[in-house]
Image (cartoon, rainbow, N blue to C red; front, side):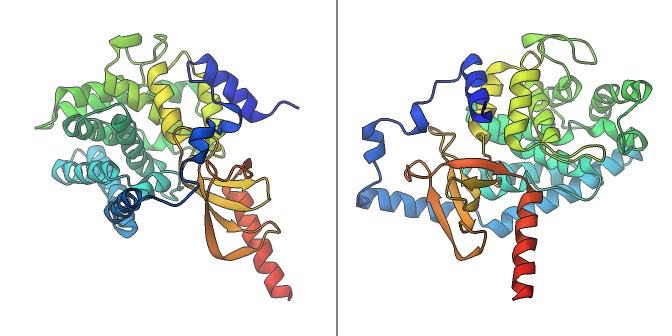
Length: 362
């Protein structure tokens, strides 16, 4: 039987990714690190990192502020009312600072589903992951702030098309042709605003251009497409794949990565795609996984050197019962453990329901 992990590893190698060692375990020297007692300096560094981690409640508040601001900006654009860029710039700057400090909560919130108009969550999600990708690409704070603004505003032209994009079905060819006008409309809206750098307007106009010249609105190719647009265009698609739409269920993260590698390789900048996969991992922060022991948990940190071996917070034991105290395991160090399969939110909810039903019956 062909395993998903084998398919992905072959595709990643074909795309230029380094070939992982067997089981992603690394060399014997690497494996010995962290097995004994921690050195005082290492303990101090770990303590300092813990103390500088942003507060989860603050991160959640930032995310909710982003949802509210997206709703306000899209509605104002729709009715041709003034757009509050001061609040947006402040939000972007705060999110940049949080991600610079290694905020994992914002990255986890990326995968949550919003019950409102999906464009609100889409705006803040694309902002978060675009900045995270910009960090990995070595952008300075000035570029991160520009990229973040462009990412948040990339679909502002869709404000004119609400009756079409909220249809609970696939769009007709005529409707899709209308949708394809939104980058130009977005650029026109931003061109009327003060204090918007040209690079942001250009990114909004070009984020649906593709490397093989089969995008829109102008059919640009390769490096004719601005760097911000190449980043946002990729994140835009990844975000859409990993979230529900009225006409389809969401892809699990590894399924979305497979889709990008197999079916969309000629559409996106391969160097940027490689960085995205390194950042989100095959098992992104916030995703549910089942281990070979049948224990179930949530990914809380990725191991960059070992993408198949993240840090997991175990919630359910091997027989499906909720642990009284969640247990954190680093799969890069617990070599007898490995991920058997990723789980959907629906599978986990079913597990919780079964547990509740069993408690009631006893």
